[in-house]
Image 1 (cartoon, each protein chain N blue to C red):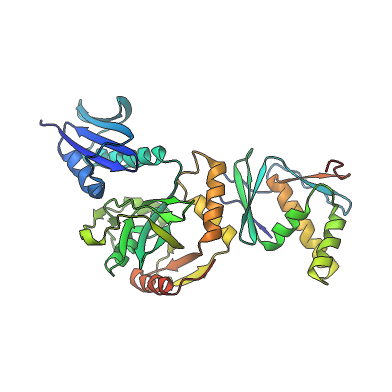
Image 2 (cartoon, helix red, strand yellow):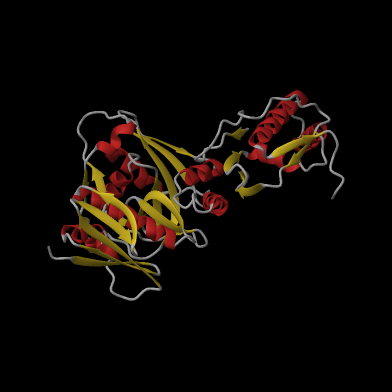
Length: 271
Length: 119
């Protein structure tokens, strides 16, 4: 079996992914298409996927991270490990479970865990000529209140037509959404609005402004940096919530909710 | 006034701390392990020992800031009554007590019978 390699760059980090099975780097290259890098970075790391005894062993710089049986499971796990490593290499940023899009030079973050609607709204708004920054995880430079691009390929869940309880949402298959290159935003964008979407089957769309301290706790609740350094994460979340207006969005249908988000961006409220 | 903690590993605010009556002469004192982060007119508290955070609305923040280890609950009520201009004393007292109790249950305040002498 021919081996294959892909290079990814973010900030000061350069990553190499190498695998015996060429399908695996090919998948990673697709997800991280906008991170393709050949230039040298300050930090380098090498992920390696070896096919051993009917399973795949994922290693980072020679340290075994895990063993996965299926090729698709390996692909997903590898993407998670890459994102985790990028986050750990950039702890000065506040990392949120969030999609991010920009309109007229201002960014909106859609913050929430799985099933909240991050990918649904980022792709819906990208289809309305918004610029795409991220799908699932987004870094914020709190010092400048800017969102940095983290444009992994968006993955939206394929609905089955049934009303699944939240706990079963991860069971839904995901499909990649191939956004046109011009929609990808490649520069940091000032953050102007935080939105915390929540899907509820059949619910009418409602948008409620959060108080700054409520917003700070919601930011913390969705912060991947929190486990590394809780004290600094609380300080950063508080600064962010003081500077940026935040809203809770309850919705049952995506397109009317996307209309609401568009109108919100046309008339941003002050914090 | 104080909303419950929402962070991972959050515990029920009432767990583990026995309910004790708070009288008007009690002096609330801030716990040194608590960081206070102003967020607009509101505040977020973070307790570095329990690793929990708590959001305070404007009123709760005001009461927290008056809990300086010198003022008693009665003095906090008097200060608030003067600054807010005529709120009913019984309402103020009830608000102060409920906030002090919530802050104590979160671990942000300890209660003493005498004020701090240190400046």
